[in-house]
Image 1 (cartoon, rainbow, N blue to C red):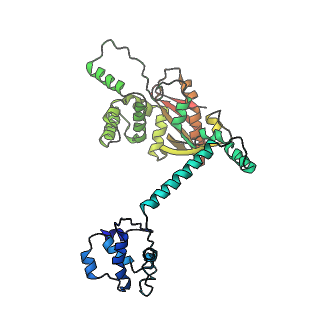
Image 2 (cartoon, rainbow, N blue to C red):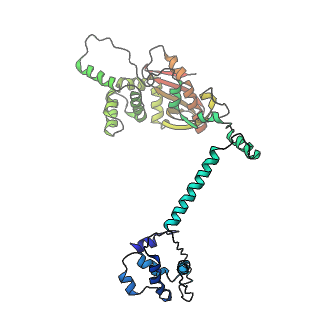
Image 3 (cartoon, rainbow, N blue to C red):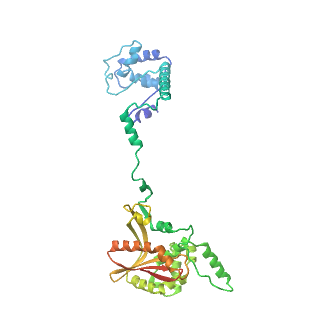
Length: 371
């Protein structure tokens, strides 16, 4: 144990211990002053009972013990080869009196400092230069405090939430026109209950996943679309609950529509691109009027889809918001800035002009061309 303790210190090792009769112990150590062998005698090593029985005999031959020996009238031995060993040992004797005196002095100094502080004249200026410097430093006002509220980067989703004036989940919550049916079979009622349990943004995510993975060469019938969705469930790309909330008629209406047919042609030609991430820089004032227009904020997002026609781009963004027929302008007002960002990002990434920007509403089963 002693060996481990003495060989693990990285820079400094401090050992403490107590000795009852120091003078008697030093007299017994004095005989080792003439021993020039590095290894202590076998008798000493075998009869040792405490760590001091090994440490002190070894130190007795070193110059670090001179002060202690001289204190008790014992002369040092300079002839020992180990006397001037370069090892830096320090041996200090600490008595109860030393500890008591140190504590008394510390208490006295502390009391004097307390008295000085208690009677301190706060109005007195001891050093005008230091006073001026302190006032300068503590009176400093950070000139760019307003920047703390400006984020370095925001997502398109954050901007959408920021534009809402109500705390309602209108985005990505598909609205279906109510069907007037005098008698609804039980299996249809059960399916509607499942749809109600899976609403809001989760439904929108499910629709987006279908459109991300849709194979356009297998969209000629509702059965093929069902098989594709089942394949997504089997491959763990979609949960069963998400698959249940997808209306095959919604996907079929899109594919059979004018925009869907154009995307199908592009997909079969390898010119359809989906889920394209992007990052663009915008003026902070464009995001929030209260922010400095000189500051720039990074906007990041993912473009649902775009395809090439000739040397130009057609941009498509899917929406499942709760809107009624005739309320197309609501979607335009809400998302036109978002699609402008997408178009700007695509132009920067590809160098091509975005000739058309579409919002496709699954609720209305209709594509909306933005001007």
